[in-house]
Image (tube, rainbow, N blue to C red; front, side, top):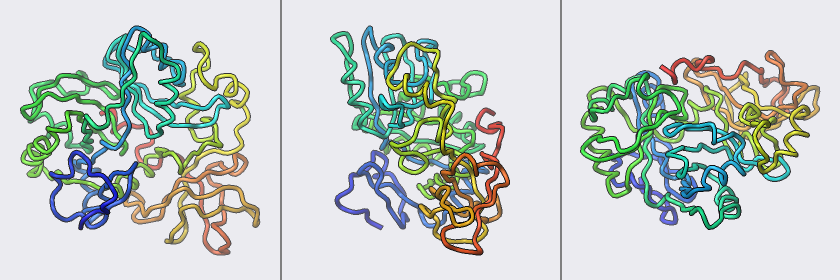
Length: 370
């Protein structure tokens, strides 16, 4: 199925196999929603391996003697504490302490960082804070980004490289540069959005098709499948991972979307710190997991208690892990966010949402760190 003509192609699109049955718009790019069998794609992620593209993310390179200071001035965590090869996940807020984006920062050295995110405002902040000692460059058009997720991901990728991809050599939230893999030089990261063991490969756009083809030549006998955005949503909801404009928007603080842990109030002043100090002890809402009693289209539907609105479902999907029960993430007033709380869905008298522990899948994050 052809995608809409007004959407741009991603770097791996030319290598995609036939069979994409629906496309969606992600930052102006055509991204497969599914190849037609989300159940099979989900099964591959959870039990073998699947490949999914994230080239659509914005990527800013900050280079120069003040690179760490520039990023630290807007990022919620203290990058100066990290060594080369480490990755930090955190947030960028406005001066008012409201969420702008959740981002990852890759540390290449004291004079080179790369920030990944989805909101162009982050780049504007970086440009504003920069001085003559640094450059800020957007690299999305140059770099392709492929995530290989699942318990067999290490075994499959290890066949393509002599580099050691073991947990000891490349632990969770670490990355390696200049890795010879599949006959080309790539960056390999231990990171993902599924709650599974997984890796992310970054390489020049011109080599994307060659890499895809080589990866599937090796991985297909081991059950490797391409996976679309529908499966990413299933996995991330089961794993309790938030997304912008769903679990948070510009009216919420990090403490209201389960990102308060990533705010380092001990570091030197950074954008929004004063407001965050004031907000940390008084979040009015939080993000929870909910199991829904009935099937249905629940995205954006209000949640109520005794008819009074106390939150909303941000996204709900049938969860294979819960044998097809509908599982969602929701923004809920903190007074109704305790595990076991029973909430009414919309105006229905029979449909309910029960707050359950987050995350539902692999609560101790054992699989991603394996």
